[in-house]
Image (cartoon, rainbow, N blue to C red; front, side, top):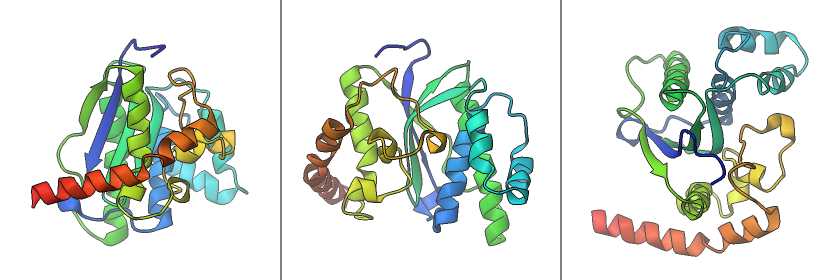
Amino acid sequence: MKNLDFGIYHVFNKSIAGFKIFNLKADFLRMKELCRYYQIEKPSLKFSRFKEFSKLNKNPQMKLLWKLSSEKKIVKIIAYCIMPTHLHFILKPLIENGISVFTSKILNSYTRYFNIKHNRKGPLWEGRSKRVLVKTDEQLLHLTRYIHLNPVTAHLVEKPEEWKFSSYLEYLGLIPPQECICEFEDVLEINPQRYRQFVEDRISYQRELAKIKALLLE
């Protein structure tokens, strides 16, 4: 890997008891907005004000996020996948405790959003974020594939590009730059066509592996 000053980590967050907390497209997009927004160390607007601002203007949200993307960040998002019951990230902290600060903000903010929306109280997430240090280029590359195949393994979609709530389409170069939230070019050399083949060649194997794992846990 080209830049490991603070290390690169696989970060995982799961809802309490596997409760489905992302149900509608709006829920998934809310988390994506939170990830983009809370990467910034000192955003020029509070998130609530940012949301209000977006309602008053014609499609200013992406323009503002694009502006925010040039501000100083606390983490770099290398890959992500938002699943109905959990989150996967590959993160590189850019300041001390960057991952802890970032995950705390996005999880707490989403909890407030979800609780208000569903008239509930209490925690939404299962304990602290789990994280594992990524040690090699090969491990990083295979980890991105594992994350991007999560929706396929769970039989939510047949192909990873059908899942709109992960970074896979960014890796394939199919998302406009102003809508991207990941920065992976300085740690991974990705050719979109070769990467697509690399990921899709693993679909059947990863599904079978998931079946075996489920049987062992029964």
